[in-house]
Each structure stands twice: as structure tokens, then as C-alpha cells.
Image (cartoon, rainbow over the protein chains, first blue to last red):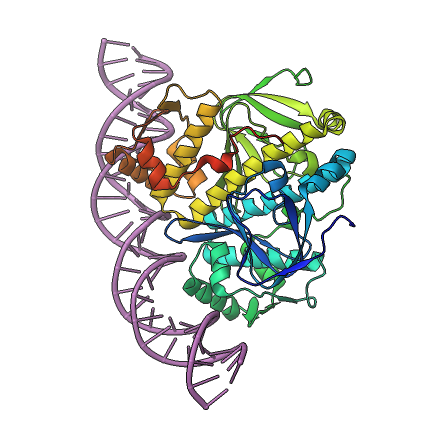
Length: 217
Length: 217
DNA sequence: CGGTTAATTGACCCACTTCAAGCGCGGTGG
DNA sequence: CCACCGCGCTTGAAGTGGGTCAATTAACCG
């Protein structure tokens, strides 16, 4: 889209959008990994979404105005932005485009519901397996998987745990269990699926919620 | 809106929309309480949203087509529906209306993020306090609070626990603790806030995420 | 090759679960 | 009008998944 600003690079670890701010533009991840997160006063931190290349991280700031959470770069990220004014013009001219953007935020919400289901009801092993299935599926669809069973997962176990709502110590034990079961391996930023069916069944993963099928909208 | 169908009544406990279905209309709660939920194969169940009079429970089915979760009536509910075709016509004619509906789904998502933060990081006491603050605030805004500190909360402790991701036994103990602290009381469907500041501070409740302020959209 | 950060492992702890037994209370029928 | 029933709430005792704390090892990096 010609209305994208020239891309810029954000260093790993730094915030892209801050909670409480009122963005004037929407941010698109061109490359790298980012997360949305919120923290409590004493530092307990919850990641609410993981974003890959091709994702808008703050589309909701267009209708909602105030950010209720922050977005941070996990790896170095290349980002590009679209001014809200441009989004407004384009979407008012084209209802279909508005529906598509709306839909993107709804897929984020559907993912969020799965995370809540995982956090509330799944064991940490099931929850981790589900997140792995989700990320692998999204990366395959986005053409980001290295091969049929490998993909980059450049998170620390701490960051992975922030998404699951468990400690890094327990992430280590959980991944160890997945290794023992020969379901999954993950070392130095590279992950491989060893047994997709095993993971899928353990997690009760059903990709419907990702709305991958082409449908008239 | 004249495009609403005549309302009908759904009995407490029955499903309003089923997971996997493809609704042809959007459902509005006219009176009563409803919830969105998902369940795992063995019956573990997570509530993903609580809806009151005035809420659309499945607006997302308009852009997304397939329901990734179910909606159930908690109390007897009066509901009304708007055909997707009507929503389509009206929103294509009026971008502002589309943005407003989009915004409603985004507020649901913001609530969901708070629930995830609660489920992942807050203790059950803090989490319960936060949910109480949220519901009371929403009911006040909707004119549904009985008085300045009372409101109807017609859920069983089981249902309340399904929203928090804890067992009904632990809900009982948690509410007991809030009673001991003189923060909150809840008996036979009626709840009262005894110490708003206490609850708010315990929960770190900040209503910004509910987007209550009027803003140009 | 030393210095730093991330992952692993072990021992102990605790918030919440499970199981099970009372209890209160509204509803119903005799 | 009251005995009885059933369901939801409460309470206690015991179990457990994941947390905390701390020491060790492995990976990375200049």
C-alpha cells in the first residue's frame, strides 16, 4: 500500500506503543516478533498476544483511541505505520476494507479466547502445546515456517511463560516433558514439531478459530 | 431500531448460539444475563464473557461467519436479533455505524484481556474483586444497578467460578474472604459493594479499558 | 577464554483442587 | 402449616500442580 510510511527498525525489548497513549497511526510488523502485554503494579506481567510479520499490533487504537495495554518488540522489528486519517479515508470509501480490518481484530479476539481457555482450564502442558500449535499454524500460513516442521521461535522461556501465565522455571519443565514425549523440540530460537498429531490431540487444537478459510466477507 | 425482530424469550440454561454454527443474524440481549463459553472434551468449561441487557453477544459473527464458541442464557433472557443482511446494508451506508459496532467488539476484546490478566497473574481474590468492579461499573453505566452500591448478580457460584477459572468451592472461600474484609457481600442473587475503594485497590481496577468516555469516533 | 545471560535441576512451599460431609432455604405436596 | 426434598452454599481435611529459591550447567559473545 502506498500509504505506508517508510519502515523503521525498533530494537528488541523496547516498547512500540505505550499503554495509556493515543496513537495517531496503526503499526504493522514487517519483520520480527512483537507482543502485547500488561503488567500489575508489583511487576507480574501477562502477554496478551504474540505478533508476527504481517500483523497489525494496534488496529484497535483506530476505533478505541486510548491504548489499554502496551506493545513491545521481542526481537528487532521492522515496522511501518498508517496514519489513522488515512485509515479513516480509505475505510469510509470502502466498507469492504473496513470489514476486513474489523475482522483482523476479531481474529485477535478469538486467539485471546483460546488463551483464556488455556490459562483457565488447560494444564500447563496442554496450554503450551496449544500455543505451539497456534504459532506453527500461523507461521505456516504466513509463509514464515522454515520447513514443514521447523520454525523460528525467538523467545526466551521467560517470554514464553509470560504468554502462558507460568514461570520460566515451569516452562523449562514443561518443554522438557514435551521433549520426553517426542512431541516437540526447541533450542536456541529454533523449534521443531516432532509429532503434530500428538501435540494437536494433547492440546485439543482446532484451527477453526483462526479463520483461515477464505470466505466472502 | 425498527430493524430489530420482535423479541423472544430464551430459558435460563439454554444455548442462544452454538459453537460451529453460522448465524444469519446478530443477537441483542434485551433483558437478562448471558455468557459466552467454551469447553474442553472432558467438560472443563471456561466462560469468556458475561453479557447484560444492551449487549450484542455475537456481533463478531457478522465479519467472521463461524462461531468459535457458544452463547448461553444464564437467566431467562429476552433477546432480539438483526439479520446480517440488515447490518450489512446499514453499515455500508454509514461508516460511522460500522465503526461503532467494530468498537463494541473491541471493548469485548479489552475486557477479555483483563480476564486473561486476571486468570494468568492475579490471585483468585484479586481476580474476583476485579470482576466485581467490572460488572458493577458496567451495570451502573447501563442503568442496571439497583442503587449506588447494590446490583443484581443472578449467577451461581459455579457460574461465577467458570468466569474466573476457579472451582465453585474456591469461589465460596473467596467471597467469604471479601465478606470478612467488609469489601463485598453477595447473597441470593443480590450483591452489594461495601467498600469500593478497597475493592478497586485490591483489584488494581482502572475502568479506562471499558472506553466509557465519550470520544469522537 | 572470561563474562554474562538463559536454561536446567532439586528441594521445599502454597494456592487452589478434590472429595465429602453438613447446612440453609425456597418449593412442593400432603 | 409443616414435613420433606433438592440444590446451592459452606466447611474441613487431604492432595497436587505449579511457584519460589537457589545452585549448577549450558549457550552466547566480544
